[in-house]
Amino acid sequence: MYILPKNLSKYLITNLEDVYNRQIILRLCINVTFNREGLIEDTTRLENSINLLEELTQKSRSIVVLGHIGRPDPKNPDPRLSVRHILYYYENYFKDKNIKIEFLKDLSSESIERVNENAQSPEKVIFFLENTRFFEGEESQNEKIRNQFVEKLLQLGDTYVNDSFPDYRISVSTYYLPQSINQKYIGTSFFREITELSKLQNPQREFVVVIGGAKLSEKTEVISYLVHHADKILIGGAMAYTFLKAKGVNIGLSKYEEDKIELAKALLDQFEDKIIPPIDHVCISDIQSFEKVSTTDSIQIEDYNIGVDIGPKSIELFKANLQKAKTIFWNGPLGIFEKDSSKIGTFEIAKHISNLNAYKVIGGGETLTVINSLGMQNKFDFVSTGGGASLAFIGDREFPTLDVILENKDE
Image (cartoon, rainbow, N blue to C red; front, side, top):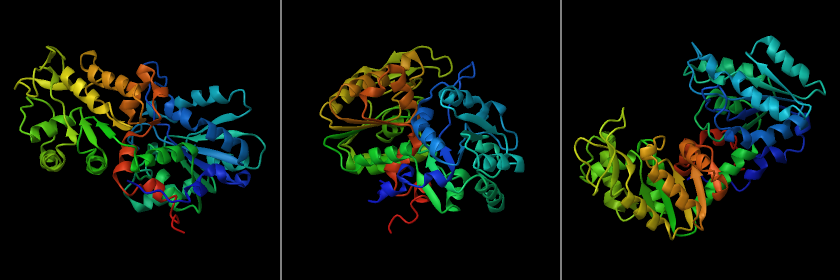
C-alpha cells in the first residue's frame, strides 16, 4: 500500500494562506456518463469537488478546470464527450452565487488572454477547458507533442491543484503539467480518498475483503497485497472463474483468464484458507439472449452453461464470513448486476454489509452504482469514487499522480 508522508496536510490546498494571489489550474474528475436524454446519470464525482471549486473561485485570482470525459480519439473527437455537456450542472449550482461559467473550446491565444484578463478583474468566473483528451498532447507518447501541450497549459495559471483521485493514470494534465509547476497541491476530495483508504493499513480485525468484477489481471496487485493483510477474501464476478478453473472445477463456458491460471493456483496454494470463491452459481446458456437461467446444485458448472452470478449457497457462505468483520473493503460486483436475473448476489451482499457494525469502505465505479441504486450511500463509512485508483493505491507503493505533487515529501 502507498505510504503517506507525515506532513501530508501541508500539500492540501485549503491550508495555503496566500491562495488569494494565485491563478489556479484545477484538475477535476468530470468523467461521467450520460443517459439517453444527454443528462448526467450520476453526479457523485462532480459533487465531491464542488465545495472546493467554489472556495477556490471565491479566493483565487482566476481558476481554470481541466478534466476528461470518456476515451475520445484526439484525431476525431466525439462531440458527445465534450465538456460543454456537463456545464449545465455547474451553471445551476452557481447561478445564485454571482459566479459565471465560461467554456474554453481551445488553447488559442484569445482563450489564454481571456483567462489572464479575468485574473485582473473582480469578476468571478470558472473557466472549463474542453475535454483534455480532445487535445493530441494529453496522452501522446511523443515527448515533443506533450511538451507543447504543457507549455500551452502553463499559460493558464501559476498554481496546480489535483482533486481528481479517480484519474490516476499518467497524462499531461495529471502528471507532466504538475511536474513543470513549483506550486502544486492536492484538493480536499483527493485528500479524503487517500487518508480514508490508508486506514486499511492497520485495520480492526477481522478484516474481510469482497472482490468482484471481470478481470483478475486488473486486480492482481491489490489481491497480492490483501492476501497478506486480510483475514478473508471473498471472490465473485467473472474473476472467480479463473480461481475455480485453477482449482480444477468445471466452469462450463464461463469467462476466465487463461494467462492468470498459474497466478490463481499460486495464490490458492499459499492462501487457500483465506480465499473463498463461490460454491454455487446462477447460470445462463446464451450471454446474448440471457435465456434459460438456472442455478447449480454444486460448485460445478455444466459444459454448456455460463456463470453470471453467485448462487444462494454462496450468498449465505459470504454472509457468514462477513459476520465477524470489523473492517470491510468491497470492490467490484459479484455478477452481471445490470440484469435482473444475475443481480441478486451483488444486491444481497450489499444489503448485508450495509447493516454490519464495521468500518466499511467501498471502491469502484460499478460498486458505487449498486450502492446508489439501493440508496445506501450513507450506510458506508467511505465510498471511493475511484475503482481502479483505489486498487492502485492499496496494491502498490507508487501512485504517480500523487508522487508528482509530493516530490519533496521526505524533506
